[in-house]
Image (cartoon, rainbow, N blue to C red):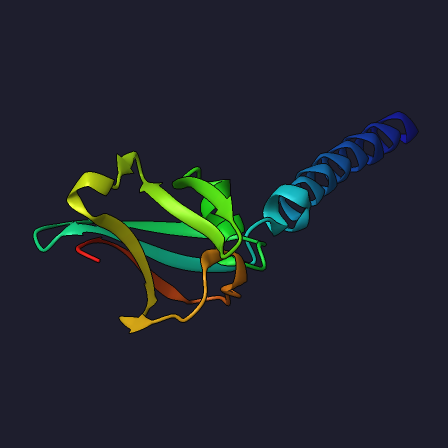
Length: 134
């Protein structure tokens, strides 16, 4: 009888340990380093013409828009005295000979500063639009 009781205690203990490990794994997945990445969720809409646009949902911990866009390798360009100058978005380069350039807006409203200085918050929606003409 004592042997059955010890076996039962051992089996219950093993099951409890397995359940505890699984629960701790799930908690780590949700709250650990990987789970915490992306406290902010933003949407970036890339508009190349009236008929062509793509939306990108970005989860990030970045403080500024450029950091979030760089994390997704969505933009390229160069730094200047006036900030970061976007020359390409999602693989589409602006053609200087055609007077093309990229404009960044938030909810359709003009932003008077560049991507380096645009602080982001959870739920923000940005548009990066290919403009023609200076």
